[in-house]
Image 1: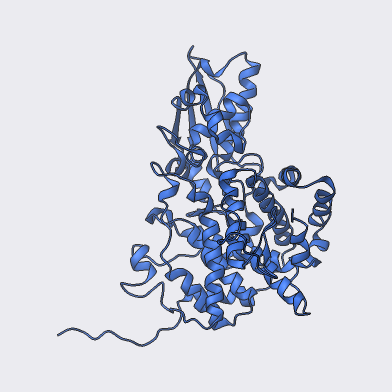
Image 2: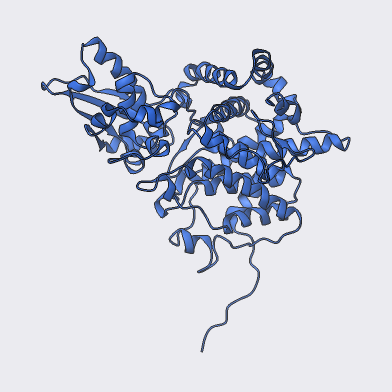
Length: 483
């Protein structure tokens, strides 16, 4: 005789309740968080502007049906497109992420919290234009910064103790969940409707990491976050119509997220939601490289100069040893053929070989014309990664969160260069004083890629002024970026 299955509707899972209570009730009062969010905004948009120089990215821009223009729709920075908020979120999210140059968060799970800006900015712009057309007040850029802080916090705090990569899921699930919560609140949904929306984000089938790893690494990793943040806008809009939610989407026996996709394990949390993640986010300032390699690339650039000073060249090298942390080895320690730019920017051997040879690492260095230099593959074969348990421990330490790499160069004549250790990359919170001027310089370079001098100045003047930016209507700020 079989047991009856209870059909009593459960209460919403606590994880969902905590997310929704945070986005609806928590007041951000950290000046550091808002200042960092402003820097994050300009850096993220700058990354998108640089990506528009690459045809593989640019071909994905625009409406689904060519020629479609949406009255009062969201505009896509650096283009002439005005789209519905779902497609605009995809456009903005894809260009932000394309070159692997926007911010990063490293913990049990890895990710790029500024990926959420696609959904946040598209929704805020659309709402602002619609409000003005109806004679109402638009949203301000402070609303956008607040949304960024909260999306960063949701994605980052879940990532601290929960590894989605270890069960084969891509981190963009957290972009979808965080964007859904923040966008739903921005749309004016009530608490129950936001709970419904967030449950819909969790119940979606989630992306596999197949496209991030050998032997299948490919360009989907560059638009996956755009897909996730646009899906979030879609789900929030569906919840606004009254679409129902699924209260025990995480905990339901057999059919819930934990049992189906997380080996039956519930999520663990290290801290409550506040503004910690934005305050401590990692900026990619110097190199468009997967973040676990940033310090290795920084060391390689220094070693390039040391080689020149010593009268040596890369042909003299017998072996390069990279002392590193476990996550680096798991993600980007890669041998064998590299088939495309997406493959190369997730290979630490490639990302170290290029600066050792040329003294630089830029987005164009992943393209075929540079990768065809035979010296790169010869040098890649001489690079060995070994885990240092102390580096791995410091990587997970909440008081350090280092991303250490140490390089030792051994020559064919038996001599070596002194090991070069870099624990914290220039974009780390511990190096903000050094990093922010370089971040602003990076933004200026990216503005110059797309806009004439007068337009660059208009964007810069408002973007570098915290109070003025926060007070500016969203649609007026986005209009500054229209080609």
